[in-house]
Amino acid sequence: MKLEKNTKKLRMNLGKIGLLILFLALGLLSCKKDDDDVTPVTPPRDRGEQQIIDNDSLIGYLESHYYNSVDFESNPNPSISDLIITKLADGEVVPDGSELLMTAVEPAKTVNFADTDYEFYVLVLNEGGGEDSPTFADNIVVTYEGFTLDNEVFDSAVTPVTLDLTNLISGWRKVLPDFNTAESFVDNDDGTVNFINHGVGVMFLPSGLAYFSNAQTNLSAYSPIVFKFELFQMFQNDHDGDGIPSYLEDLTDDGEFTVNFENANDPDDDDTDGDFNPDYADADDDGDGVLTKNEIEVATVNKPTRQEVLDTSLQTNQVLINKIKKEQDGTYTGTIITFPDTDSDGIPDYLDAK
Image 1: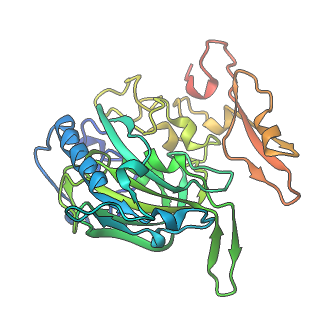
Image 2: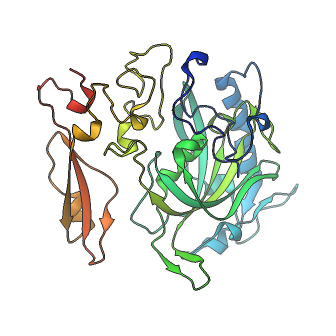
Image 3: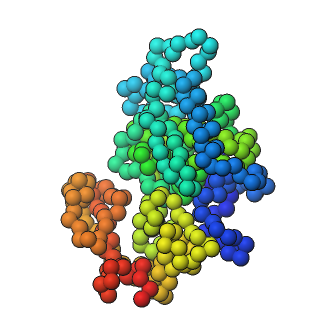
């Protein structure tokens, strides 16, 4: 399994590291392989120039391949094993019951990553019937298969695995939040689980949202790639256990966690107290000696319906976290976090060291 980064330690050897962007180590894939399996290209190519090349390659692939769309029509429980992508032969027209990928994918999605504007493409085979969608910082339960534009498989998980999106290549953090989890599941007598009406899709990624200059086993550097995936479940992460879900500790609101190791006081990173530990991994975000969990207030609200929880009236210093729990009696429970500002300086206590 190569999706996860080799290095999962959140605290780094600062004496050896200059400017780092956490989770921008694009090629660190394998959860069990050594760093020797990653071969970076030095110096790396210009990201903007490479994106132009990659986008041309992706468009060429989408315009020359079709899939068996008929098998996904009125299919309440599709699987990536049902998906067949075929290259158009010279002079061939798309067969009945199939659709050209270029016309089937959603309009190109644009995101800024590593100071570069990237375009990528998503084929939605099933949005998913569940009520939950992961954020970029959550755990997901998925199956997947990764392959090159030459149809060479370089990574796969045929049985459901749990992955932390913060440990994956950036493309996954841009795509998975647009899908829902399974509507329900059934435990089988043999210990397996059948998921009903789960999210199913395909992502077509430029190398800049994948492994960029880091060659991998069976994958060369600067390779645009494809992942087909099934999303079954999600679990909300609070990596540092401070009471604030990790996705709310993305201070720059860019769906990534960044730290500037050259400037401890950089206002445009995700490290409030300048200790080179991003807030989502820091139990004392402002470094005042008081744990974050003791500078916030957490309460729950229970309503007959999910919508009623979503409609809960909030004060300006409150937030309803996006994970809403369905209880056994059919009601719904939401969690509200209040961020006190005791000195009224406009900075909540947990981010204010004064």
